[in-house]
Length: 331
Ligand code: HEM
Ligand code: MG
Image 1 (cartoon, rainbow, N blue to C red):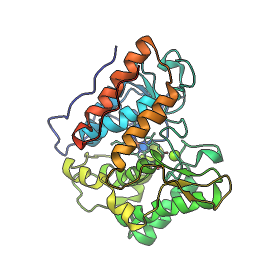
Image 2: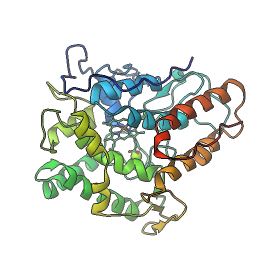
Image 3: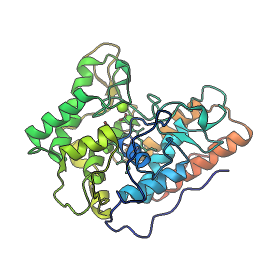
Image 4: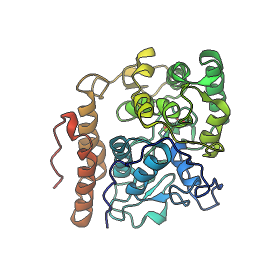
């Protein structure tokens, strides 16, 4: 029942992806969309099932085909999300809210709530979506988008680029510190926040354009409407991988992982969270498996246990080369 993730696509050329076979169609009233503009776009263009319910293997395939995301990156993100938000037995994940279409629920504390689920993958200080504390962590937020526009004009010459991404990432963190008493910015969110800040530059700029500047109208298309511009060509594979490694955005304003402690303006560094130090990536992996995932599945049995361990294998396989010690299979 579980489909293994596909490998790297052979043809990584820059090519037309908003093509006649993949027209943008607005989601219907029962189609699910969520906090990720990349996946919303892939669903609206039919690279993913238009109902917003997909197998993780389909998501990997779609991210590669539609955006030229590198295989191990696509697998790592997708299986991280699927392990905490998806139905491991039916092999289905909602790209937005919880849905009966992913199949029968496993016993709690498992959630299987789709990508909208707060604090296991989705997290605070997103660019165009609000913090869960304010009530909606997944819908496009015009006020926040205007912040992206303002910062891009002020620091990026009217574009979303590395300069504006660096300032916006920092500003979103400062805003959350000042307004969200429950602001949390620890691993894994700490890592995804910097990754997502780079993704629009890596993946939303036409592959024929080498400027590193994302037009703000095009940005709105992706963030708000999940829509590729007319004639859109997917990114240059090498450039995208380069940009997706987001060190410059962090280096511009380094922030240590931490959280507010129940009141605003109380940000306290959390020394127990993985960070960008040399050992940080393996700690991200180990903590995610032993704390976040194990916390949801403390005593899985039978086919659920088998599915859990199989997905954990897919997840580890793509980082095996990074020298992290594999967490033993759950029993
Ligand atoms: C958020 C882009 C693939 C799950 C985001 C954001 C961007 C983005 C720009 C930040 C939105 C914001 O801060 O307003 C992309 C692109 C992808 C891609 C271009 C493909 C090339 C994926 C995959 C998954 C995923 C494969 C998991 C299956 C999420 C989630 C969020 C998110 C859960 C919300 C996190 C948060 O902001 O709190 N994505 N993404 N994305 N993405 Fe993706
Ligand atoms: Mg968020």
